[in-house]
Length: 56
Image (cartoon, rainbow, N blue to C red; front, side):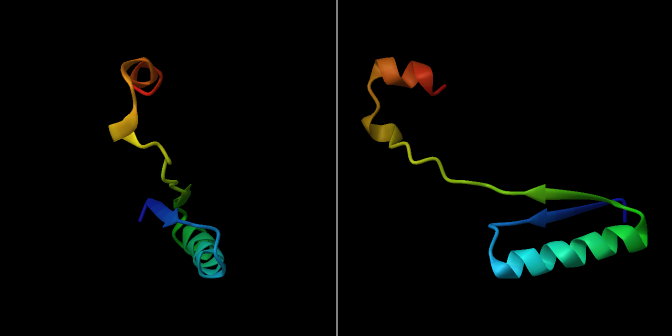
């Protein structure tokens, strides 16, 4: 195992998973990567042409 990906939403359960991921990375001498994804609150249907240029 060379890489470990730990997705997170910063909840308590994800924090526990992150600690486990760190332990696993140390055990397997692997790199650990954290991923936090957010939803963008842009309503693409309602954008006019000028605003579309700002959000390619």
